[in-house]
Each structure stands twice: as structure tokens, then as C-alpha cells.
Length: 361
Ligand code: SF4
Image (cartoon, rainbow, N blue to C red; front, side, top):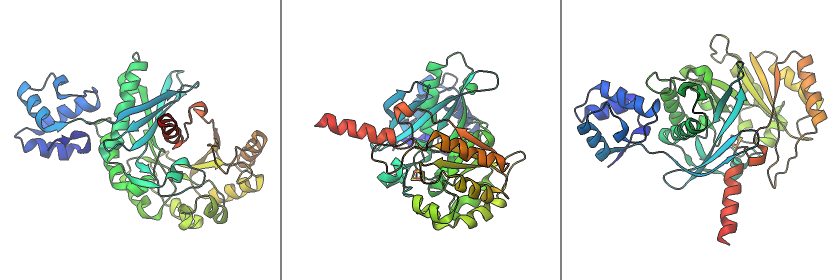
């Protein structure tokens, strides 16, 4: 049976290789080829003996997802639709931003499940329901696909500068696939892997009671919590499953969430036109956040076809933001990127399947 190396932690790979009589040093060397030098076959690993390369080629593989579709929007946002080994489709997005030195930097939004069980009412992925968890190899495969793409489109940037940040904000709820997410984070943090520090990786969750403490104790990533409503009643309407853990209890828990020096929690708030975007909601939100060390990302809703929601009026967005600033809450209005390529979670997959069905007739 062929072993998928992307699905093994360094320890697991070291043990596996030890079973063939090789030293831990070789395991680290091969890992570096995969993670830092973007090798896609054992043949490329020129400082590994021919005999070992042959042995590896016979018993192991580096399995990347297949790119089913890729689209780049006018603002530089690139969305990939990836086909996993069993044919399941997931999405990952590269979002450009300008750093302080004026250079372009990329943030990658990662998926961790095929579909999602949370059923948030504004989300295309929620509408498709839960299919299955992604393995560590599948989660990390997204990063390798992005690195390959960036090496092509940003050849002059140093390898470790192209992809600056990762956010687990794509398809799926990370706390519902915590084991594989934590395993992935360990590889991403590892000095033999991508060596991305926790402050460059954010895990975004609805905030489930089960798993949040474990994620915090791991110290492997920063935390973002999707609130999307300033009170329990409204949250229960738009995020019915997430709201099973009452908002008050979630916020109480977050007050003692383990933070690193200078770390602050991030709260996400999606502004839905006429639903949660009134000044009264902003005042409630400010009260809710008053005793938590956190900042707020305001995201303007980008309606998907058939959605029951609409985008908020620009004036309402500004008024909402002003209330928060007046209450001394750090709120940042996040520009919605990639609108022309359906970059919101789940939308590209839906559009792709509709297009494919139409083509089939
Ligand atoms: Fe799942 Fe996130 Fe969509 Fe909610 S918003 S249904 S948690 S993918």
C-alpha cells in the first residue's frame, strides 16, 4: 500500500522511515524538500541517494489535490476549486494585500471540511450540509497548491515571503475537525515544515464549547470568533447551531482564553442588510465586547444567488462602524474581495457544479 507522506507528521514519517532502516536526519531532509523546496516527486530530491529515492517511489507518494478550476478576480484574489482523491470538491482562496513596505503579500483562506454541519443561514457551504472531514494531507495540500501557484506568479519574491498568512476560514468548522486541524498546525509551525509562527495563522470558528479550550492550549494559532449577531436571539436565528452555546457563555469563556503577548482575539461580524446592521445592534455589540481583549472585523455581506439576505446599505455600514469607534471598540471594515469570482465560502463550488450540470444538459 502506498503511504501518503503529506498525511504524516514529522514524527510519524520518521518512524515510518526508521522501519525501512533510515535515520531521522533523512526524514527531516525529505520534509524540507516537500515543504520548503516544493518537490513533488522523490526524483527531484537530488541530495538523497538514488537507492532511497527508488525505495520511496515504490512505497510512498506526495499526493496533492487536483486543481479543478482557478479564477483570478480584478482585485487579484485567486480562487481555486480543488478535487480531492475521492472526487470531493473544496475551495481555497488567495487574497492579496499590501504590506507596510508596499509589497504585495498573500493570505490564504483554507478549508478543513467538505461541506459543513453548522448550517449558518447566510453561507453557501452551510447550505450543502456536511459531507466529511478533510485529512491533514488534504488540508496541507491546499497550501502546497498555493505555493506552486505563487512561485509562478511571484517569481521574484523570496520563497518564504510570498504566502504570509493563513486563515482557516474556508469551508467547514475547524473545531469539528480539530484533530486534523491541530496536526496541520503542527506541520505549519514546525521548523522542518513551513515554520509559520502562530501569529501568522488564524483559526476562525463559530465558537463551540467542545474544542475551544484545546485549541487555545495548543498555542499554535490565533483565534477569530464569528459572532455575526450582538444578542442570543438574533444569533439563534442566523446561526442556529452555533447559538446552542449561549452567546453570554461564549463571551465569558473568551475572557480567560489564553492569549500570547500582544495577541488580541478577533471577532468577525458579517453585516446583513436590515438584519443585524442597525446602530442599536452596534451598541449591543460594543457592550458585549467591552470586557474582552479583542478587535472586530466588519465584513459586508456579498449576496449569493438565492440568498434570503441582501447587502447592507453603505450608509448603514458607516453608521455601524461609527457607533463602535465612539464606544472605543477597534473595528476594521474589511473590503469584500473577489466579488466578481464568487470568493465567499462555498460560492465557487456551487457555481462550478451548476455550470457542469448545465454543460451535461
Ligand atoms: Fe460552516 Fe462557516 Fe459556513 Fe457556518 S459560516 S456554515 S461554520 S462554513
